Length: 67
Image (tube, one colour):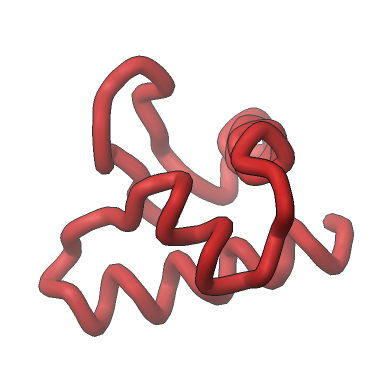
């Protein structure tokens, strides 16, 4: 796992806990972590999903869940 993926996973865990399980948007993840491109966030979330760290429905809004 890359440092960026670990940072995103950590952010997701915190965000989901603090927001009653409601998932952040890609833009919220990008802003919170200071990432310049939303596509970079999307790719990192896609990799986390492929590796089994999260459950995510790519074409649905706010569906990220940490496993």
